[in-house]
Image (cartoon, rainbow, N blue to C red):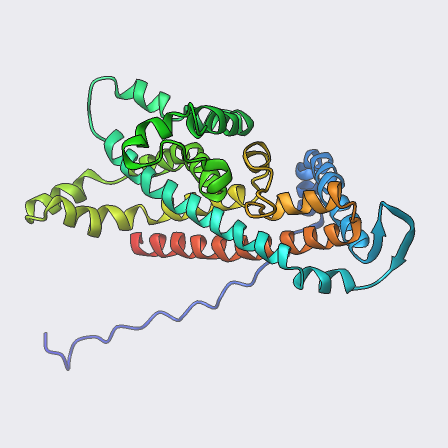
Length: 320
């Protein structure tokens, strides 16, 4: 049948977009009934977290020093102006960025290496995977005391014993390199967490893709760079986000190892706020510092979460 005599196909009319129907009153009532058991937990969370934060905002707008109880007065944003001109606060902020970035980056690199080793088949792999997480389960206070008095002690420390041939026999790590000492203890604590996240990503990788790369003649390094590493991107970003949120709030390790010293050389923001509150008795400025730190942490976390969600959406679109 020729094209001229062929019957023309009628195009189906386009369906109009469906309008969103508003839920009925019964459906809304049923939804509220289902969510009712969560109401006590929501109220508890608001009371425990938001009310103290609102009180902190109120304190930050007042001039209140415990050494001068009669000095309470509304000063507006004066405390916030003093915060951003305080050199010690800016130094503590720089230490916070340095400690957090160093710990997260080094722990993630070591975690990737451990995950690649633990992903292989060897005798006793289950026992090794169980033992590798033990540093993360130890209390941070115990971790700090372990590194301060056993590993980094200048006379009887194990690290100086190992590094004695290189001229570090009497090196006092805690007093001469306080920030490095804190970073070493935190890296030892957080490396197992990063390794488990990356190991979960390695085990979720498709074996067919790896076999296809081997058939195409790709080397192990090329397969890691172009196949494995892009697959691990979501897990690495999640580990960096979670590690940064927790490490930026480090207090106990610094308190037990260096107490922010010498002077304020190893103080981070949480420890410096503690010093201004309980040693300087300045409630107004310490409250302003707390508000600044919370707002900054929220902004960084939102940007990181947006990046991670965008990565997940791109991965879903690629699969579909």
